[in-house]
Image 1 (cartoon, rainbow, N blue to C red):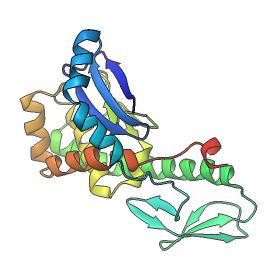
Image 2: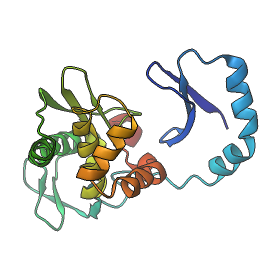
Image 3: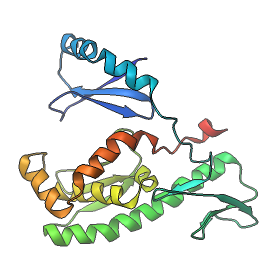
Image 4: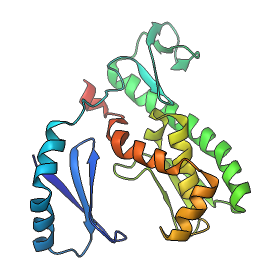
Length: 220
């Protein structure tokens, strides 16, 4: 049960995270191996318990396709594109699994960009800020990011979570346009614009590893 060690330049303290690949220990870039080994030893019981109790990861094709936290059944038809009619996903009969996977992520990205732009307007008005650019990414360890020049990226995998969870991340990143840190002022401002921040943060901590868009080779 290996723990993946991830060194991050901006991180100030060590913390464990459960990801799609198992357990990660994210640490400040210059933290010594001696201290890392001590952290692992001190948390050995927790690591073993967490590893053996990891919930089954959800494949996007096991029981349908997920959209905003709801799993919809798939139906094969004679169309040429992936469509969502509100109750199910309609999948072209000619597509294999890899093709479906590719088009599903593209479909999610397009709708994610629309959704983020729509919700961004709410927080830009509340915070009196404006992002320089908005993009949809597919990061492994980060749900969103905000650069010093106001470029914001939101993880497409959040389209698999309930809307309120994605809204939390959007509010979080737009708050960084006011406070480019995680200071007390940042969390206070975020709480003001998104009062359920603590609940959403806890949800991501517990369930974030289930929000997976698997690569085509994983599904063949």
